[in-house]
Each structure stands twice: as structure tokens, then as C-alpha cells.
Image (cartoon, rainbow, N blue to C red; front, side):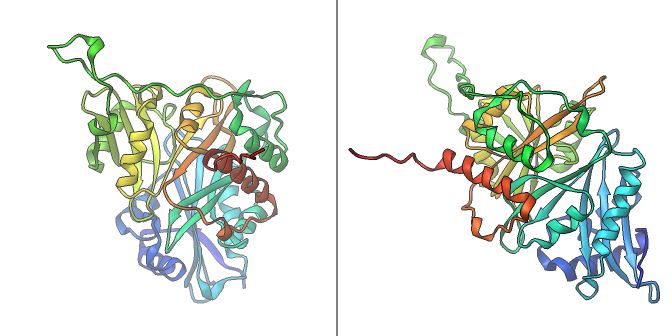
Length: 397
């Protein structure tokens, strides 16, 4: 029986909520399937394509999926793929994914579409693989559903995009296993990219001197005591739009920040998207620039962890050796590499980006099911994680 595929409409919201509850239960941490107001906004959003599948006879809604974009952006996110348990094994997920990609990538609307895929089984990975998506890495401990789960990052590029990557001269050495995994999985060549020693982390900024004491006598700074965290989504969103009218300086596209972290001297601002339901956080941008906040990365991460984020991630340019070194120094692991993710401003090339992540909770690697193409990324993550967190063995003579 062939399903009827069409765009979602506001009249579908009640039925869509029932679908997502039937598939994910009460723990689905995404507004797309749970918040009627946000669902209505996305259905009417010109940068979002939301498709549903129905039984041709009864008209009952049986599956749903969407590609979400942003104004002026060329990257889309495949999300909300759900097939009712009573209608599985009929190829509905593949049919919806293929139609979404046909209407976005093949029409030139987007350069690439990415998806985060569950690793509790091989099925979700095979669905996106059958539709031209290829693995880019592992996001360990990325989300809390009923338990903490790891996700795999997959992407599908429009024709010719991967061939227009801007070369990168060097990367910090801990990224070498990830680059080798990308070469094996995608056939992308990083043979000319040198692996060099990470740069030393920036020193914490000195505390302001007291008027009664010379500057040289100022005590060492304690950044964590002076960092404020503001959770006011409307205020944060408006301030963020004022600071970043364009998307080229965002760490992470397709994430609207709802949290602001700032020291009491207003030396910098870090904007983050904190999802309390899923207990994860994405660092979206820093003002006036990422370097201003680099020395505060540890207290920023601690503040977000105290707020309930068991997983913190950032998306950084592969060409920024200094930023990658700073995150490595604070225990962040390079888990995924997104080649040709962003177009070069004013040019014809595309820049590569790295997902750096840190988790405050124990990772149960035994629960990760890596389908064949994902296995090199799991091996690369395990290698880098072990060299970061496990002490070297010493042999007594």
C-alpha cells in the first residue's frame, strides 16, 4: 500500500503529537513533536519543510519528518523522523527522507542536510544511509531520553559540494584519528593536513587591581565566582540578534540560544542553547569573539553542568587551530567532522567544521551500536577519549 505524502498543516498538530508520543513516549525532548505553538510556527516557517505520510484509504497520519533551515542559511537539519509502530517495515521513513532531500538538495535550496541518529540499534543508521546520508562522527552521551544515549552524526551533500572544500594546513594532533576516519568513510583526502602539537591554553584573565594596591599585587582571578548565567529566552534571543545579525559568526547554526553567560566585568558574552528536557547544551556564539571567552571555557562548562547539562558541545572551524587547542585543553573530545559545511564568504569554496563535546557523565560504550560505516568513528572517539582521560601505563623495571 503506497502512502500519500504531503506537507504538514496546522490541522495535523493534534494527530502529530499522538504520533510522537506513540513512537517516543513521554521523554521526547524536541518541541517539534510536543509543543503545539512551536509546531504551528514550524509548519508555517518558509525555511522548514515538514512532510507527513497518510494511509491512502483512511487518511490516518502514519509518519512524519522535517528538514529545518534558517534564513540565509545553506544547511538543513533532518529531524522528527517518526513512523507509527503499527506501520513500520513499510519504508515510510525512507520515503519521507528521500522526498525531503529531493525538494531541498536536488532543487539547489540547500548545500547539505544533516541528521543526528540514535545508536541503540542499527536500524535508524541504515534508514539514513539508504537515502544517501553518510556518517560524520559520534556524539557520545549527547541526549537524555529515558536514559543517556549517544547519537551518530550523518549528512548528505548536494552534488559537487564536497569537491569544493577549502584545504586546511594543520590541525592539533588529537584530531588525527578523526581525520583518518573521515578519509575511510567519505573518501575525503586530508593527506596534506599536518597534525601538530596543540597550542598552550590561554591563561585566566587577571583580576582587577584594588585602588589601594598596585596592579602587580592583584590576586589570581577566580573566574567561576564571577560568572553569571542568565536564563531568559526572550531577552537572550533579542540580545543575540543584536550582536549577531548574520549567521557567519555562530558556532552552531539552527540553534537559537536561550541562555547567556557573562562575567561581572562584561568582558565577553557566551550564548548557549540549553535543553533541560534532554539535558544537553550547545554553545552557539561568543561576543565580541571566541578568543575573548577562551580562558573561561572551564567555568562556562561547569556552570552549564550545574544547570543540568550532562553534555556540552560546540561546532568549530577545522582551520582554527587555536580554538580547537583551547577546547582540547578543557577535556573536549573531537567526535565528528562536518566537511564542506559552510560556504566561504564571497568565495566558491566550503569550510570544514568539527564537533567538540564534553560529557559530565560516564559513557556506556557497550550501549552504542555502530553499523559498519560508523565503526571507524567509534574507534577514533575511543582512541582520543582514552588518551585524554586515562592515565598512561607505567612499567616498573
